[in-house]
Amino acid sequence: MFELVLRAPQALVESVSDLLMDELSALSVSVEDADAGSESERALFGEPGMPAPAAGWDRSTLKALFHTETAAEAAAAVLLAQDGSADPQQRVHLQSLTRLADEDWVRLTQQQFAPVEITPTFWIVPTWHSVPAQARQVMRLDPGLAFGTGTHPTTRMCLRWLASPFAAASLQRVLDYGCGSGILAIGAALLGADNIDAVDIDPAAVQATRDNALHNGVRLQSGLPELAQGRYSVVLANILATPLKLLAPLLVGHLAPGGWLVLAGILERQADEICAAYAAHLPLQVADQQDGWVLMTGQLPD
Image (cartoon, rainbow, N blue to C red; front, side):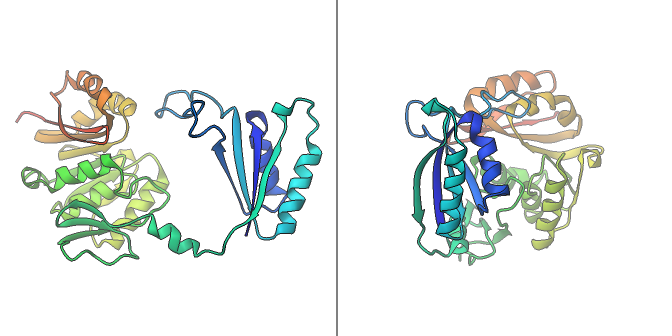
C-alpha cells in the first residue's frame, strides 16, 4: 500500500479529491486541516440547523491510498501537470509518497473499540471482545453507520441514569427520540423495560436500531418519529442543544404524569438555555456531568 500526501488550497480540495477517486485509482482519500495543532487550527462544523463557520480549511492535507507505487506516481504527475496557477498558494503541492507497512487493518480498527463500562456490572462489549468477568448485563454493539457506540460521555450518562435504582421503577413505557444506533432503547430493554419505541428521522438509524436490537435479543419498536404516540414514563433524547430546544413542546407532550424527561447532548455552558427553553413545561436540573457535557432531567408532576 502506498500513501500520496498532497497540500491543496480550499478551492481545489473537492476537485482534487474527485479526480483522485474517480479517475486516478485512489482507494481512499482523507482530508485534514493542514494547520491542525497550530494556532491557525479551526473547527468547521457547528450544531445541526446552524450554518458552518466556513466551507473548508484554508489549507488542507489530502492523503490518498494506492495499491501500487506506479499508480501513486501517475496520480501525482497528473495533478501537478494540471496545476497552472502562478500563485504558489493556489497550487497543489506534493508532500510525500511513502510505502505503508503491511498491517492487519481490521485488527487495528477493532482495537480502537474496547468494552465500555457503564456501571461495574453493566457493559457495552463489541462482538469481537470477550465479556468482562464482572459484567452481569451486556450489550453487544459494534461501530456502524449510525451514531452511538457507548464511548461518548452523553451516551454513557444516559445509560448510567437508566441503570440507577430510582430509574428502574419508571421503565414501564420508554421513548428513545433520536435513537441513532438504538443504544439507549436497547439499554432500557436490558434493564427491564418491555414497552419501548425508538424513533429517528434517519432511515439508516431506524434499521441500525432494529438490527442491534435483534443481535441483543431484545424487543422494541423502531421507526420514523410518527411512531411515537401517546405518553411515556421515560422520554430519552440524546441529540444536541439546538434541536432539544425546538423539540421541547413535543418531548414534554409525550410524558405521562410522573414521567421522567432525560436530555443529553448538552454542553455545560448550554445548561441555562436548556432550562429556559423547558421552563414553561417542567423544571430541569443537571443530574450528571462528564468531560464538559451534562445530563439534564425533569419529572412531570403527577
